[in-house]
Length: 329
Image (cartoon, rainbow, N blue to C red; front, side, top):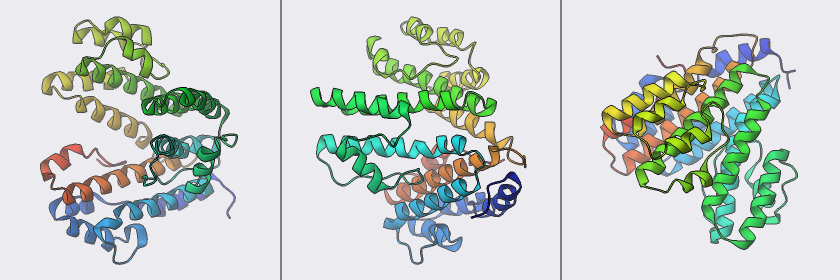
């Protein structure tokens, strides 16, 4: 295996980026049927599986993400940073495995691209043994297991793991300004989105205590105080956020359209633009992380289009749900 270095990574990434799905391929998938979309993927060897059927789309994504994970681990001179992004898939899989155990389910969807394989994570959950995980996440899982012994609360699983992951990411990225900004923005956007969804549901203010994530620039107390005030009052709690301008743009678009998805789009576009602005730097870790995030977004786009076509979702709706891919202009 080559010794990780930025010079080697830069050369390798140049070749890898050529394998990302081009806008023309995405458009071709949107314009045709589900079978046409699969042919478009086959033509560019996505997933490198000959004669793949529509039912194989998850397998294709899994193969692509497994390759991307391996590339990132081999290329990264800073695994403590790149592992933060790979770990997100593991956290999602831990949620699914815990809920499956709680509900006695066996057929689960596994998110590819993480640090641990299905067998390793399954054994952790079965044996309730999490020592291989980072301390912050291990401690959260041990506390969660005690809680689940008393009450079967599927929602508590997602909240506990999301909190632990974000707390760990904020801690580990603290000395890396761009990544610290990335995770602080993620925290602010997610907490504002949680605030908006709870208000739209008519949930009580106490519910905010149960689901709020670690705070960054947007302070929990300010959200709490604004919960029963006018929508405009929310604008006043964003002043310390690293993504204040993007949050405001999303909220303004939401006021015009009435759709919370406007804030979700603003979140995605802000996070991808944060790293895409460093895409061509040859002596930093940013392009390596950016490539992995590009593969994640690519997989989401593939899944959305193929499953949407299979389920008869109108093309216009699919286009609205697609956010711009990494590096797209």
